[in-house]
Image 1 (spheres, rainbow, N blue to C red):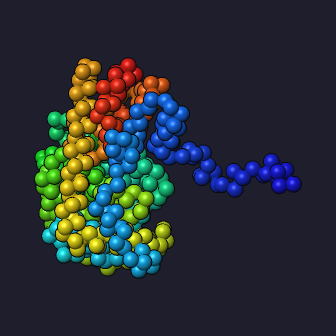
Image 2 (image 1 turned 30 degrees about the horizontal axis):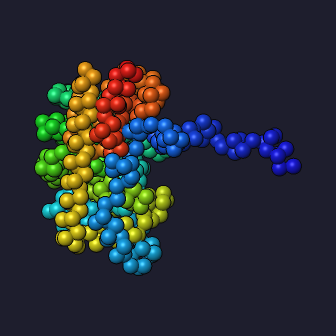
Image 3 (image 1 turned 30 degrees about the vertical axis):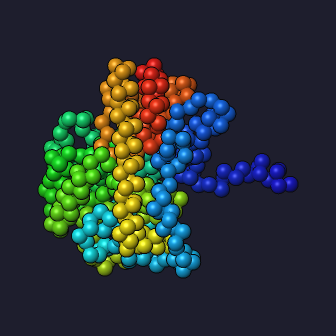
Length: 412
């Protein structure tokens, strides 16, 4: 009887039309699963889809300092609910990782990873149907996060290496969006951009901030810094310079500046699903109440244990020094992989790839899906994105780059 009922009333009918026809799995995770399945059958596979840091044996890197701290956590630091908006000590510790001069997190909340922070920014700074502005190419789930929160993504192209950002064009696009919506939310994934691995130059950063400064009198503007990969930079001093530029801009008080922070990559606690949305240069009761309401209505509480760990780390100078050494080691490993890939590409008479930080680089391809499919036929997995291919340096061994480059040339 149950089978007959289902034949006449397929389960899909319970879904409203707007909730149908989604892919069965996230495209990136689906590619990774396919690559792993082929490798498990004994095929020689290069899997550059992964978004987690792997060593040269293909094992996920788990930072020893972090695990040592995790093992020290007491039951009371793990089991109880965290406050709805997060532990204030945790939020302050997260903000101080990037702006040590801060004495308080300002306004903010704990979130389920950086993704949760991005989602809450849409819920609180846009009306349904409006669009967030970001640089392209961008991390694919930006589109999903926007769609699931009733928003859209509008993009401005990242300039080619060695070229300046077109400030006048950005001004025109941002002004048009601001006038249509009455407000502007700008997601800036920089430094260590995903998926290009590049960082905006000081002049480019000044141009972006200058555009926002000039438009602030036309309506409320929020600049949200998506800071997922800062610990893995070629030049940490350049990263700190960028963060201080943003702090000075925020202190002007004309544009609301916040940050999406995460423990996933920084502490290799991907599965802990903990991050933060903070606005360190403002203390606003209405904004704090709105964020807390979003937390309650969206996920209630972020996990307690990772928050406890971050607080412990902030109070342990020796652990911080050990962790910094680990970050330097893996940053050098990523740099070596980027260098090896560039050399291999040049050996195939192709352009190299600039890398300034993060887990990824982007290769240009006029038909990304077609090129990615041809690469799969050669046992090489990458993620097709708009106008290119995302390559995960975090999982690509330096010794595999010649084979990767050869397959890429043959697939173009």
